[in-house]
Image (cartoon, rainbow, N blue to C red; front, side):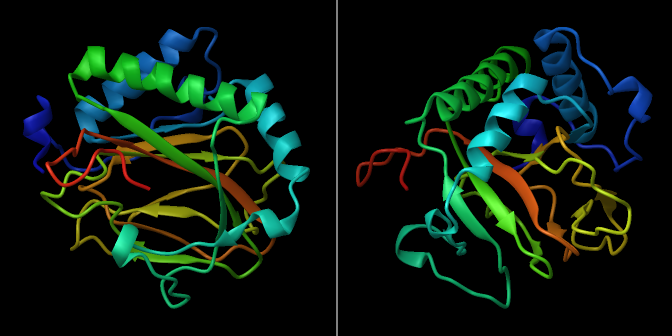
Length: 235
């Protein structure tokens, strides 16, 4: 997939905007427009403290009420190609199904963002899937892409962080790379409420080991991949 197929062009990665410009969003549409502008101009958006506060608190309350047995070891690949590989990643996940009021509110927020981006950028986003991710101290996810080119299984990736009082020595940063040749990348601290979106096929990325428990939401917007052999979306 080339960015220009979505009616905008990729430009070289530049540093994230100053936090003062992204600290507060009084209106949801202001946030969504900021995300759309950043995706259009640079292919990614990094928005500190932008998840609605009440929604973030609700998700954290549900998260802390989960039993560890409700999390399963994360794998790589989909369907028949799905497998567990601790060389690549060691986190544990719990899928959002929308069966709880909090899960339903989270998915409704993500769906409103989907609708806005479709209207604003003509992305044709068709479905959304997401899970809670728990990285214990020392856990990691090595450098990878969220989608394979031309398979169109995932178009836009989103990460939301759920870590209050995260310090500079706690580690666990997301590193977003411009391309395969980039070895420096852009580090994102997993602070509570930070929302990150990026084009799934364009940006390799990794999660560095953290020094303590690290929680986040990982989600993916997909286009319709229905074929004569299957109905989208698969799980």
